[in-house]
Image 1: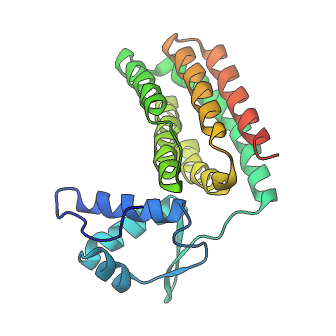
Image 2: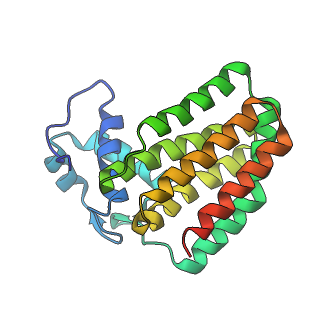
Length: 217
């Protein structure tokens, strides 16, 4: 596991701080409900408080941390099973439609990029540690975000962004084979979108969501 020290100075310092904190949160190295001190994180990462605050603001937007007035930041609580079920209900109502819209709207370059994302997941899919899974979760988030952006519905895109990460936090107890299954399902979605087939894209996304939910059983 990488240490929370010796982070390089700019460029992209905030991005690297965010990536390091993201990994700690996704692997539960920083436990749900933990209070986060900007000053302590600044000392631990050997950076100023500015990139820490910027990274925490981004993590708050992703739903991974919450900001409490006059108290500061703390790690978001782990979602309850009934909340997870509601998230999947929302995903089934929205993501198949968004995949169909992406199949209709994506440019040739965007379709090529989506297929490239799948190939990257396939090449990096060996999951042996929580840190490996945190890396996969970032690729998964990017994949679904790309489709959501292409759909043109920014309201649903913003709503889904945090929900995907909470699913990943809940999924930490799943076996590595779940990742291989998800990658295959992603490939079917991407291929349908690349073929500009809205119905096939919607069906592939619906199947992916249903199978993802079944893996929690």
